[in-house]
Amino acid sequence: MTNVLLLALVTLLLNGGRLVLAGAANICNKLDACRCEYPDGSGIDLNQVVPKNGDYLETMDPKTQDRYYFHPCSNIKYLDKVGTNCSTEHGYTLCRYNNSTDNYTKLGTANDSNFNTPEDGQKYLVFNTNSIVTTIQLLCLKHDKSYIYVEMDQNLKAESQPKLLLFSPYACTTTIEEISQSSVGQVLLILFFTGTFTYFTIASIVRFVYFGARGIEVIPNLDFWKDLPGLVRDGISFLRGGCHVERTPDPDSYDAI
Image (cartoon, rainbow, N blue to C red):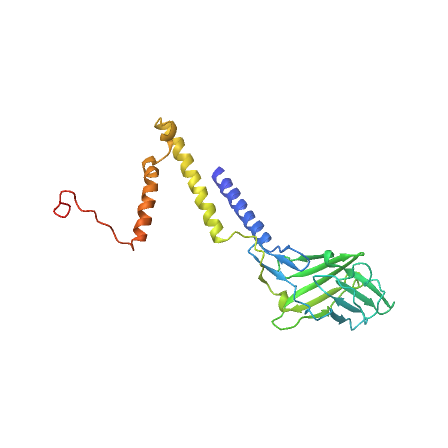
């Protein structure tokens, strides 16, 4: 019975670890206002959603005639109508024109954006400001341009929780330049130095405790390490000589005489 309970506990711990790793793999950690990165080095980069010569992406809600202006990555102040709430101070990243009241509402700046990547594989850019939570679903579109639309299937809270759809090639998962994962070379170096340190430490302790070695004698394979400089010198000479072995005649041979 004890063995069965132990086996069940180990299985539960293993499955729990897998669930934690799977959940962490879906998290896209924010790097800046426009980029996030998954643990495997891939991620989302929205830097080129708006062309350099473009002002913003614009869309209109066909039901309310409200307009949305979206300029990811950085704040701008440009609008058709100056002196509005969106164009004051540091500008806006996301702005809404309310057709019924004829005014503008700032829905977020570059600092207000956060990435949300739930376990279902969907990707969202979320703005939370002025008690308004705006969700922009990022949809991968293999095209040369980006488009933004209002989600038509919205509930009655659309005024305080607007939902937009961004179709863009830059919403597709890509490789992020700032990869936090260690490279293959770094991993090999870490393994080499860790293995070397472990080898010398364990071997020295064994020689000290069980063989009574003292001083320099505790170093494992001491003769090899003493001969190593000469071996390296011989190897260099061998390479310089075109990988030809220089044969020294026997002093008692005819050639030597």
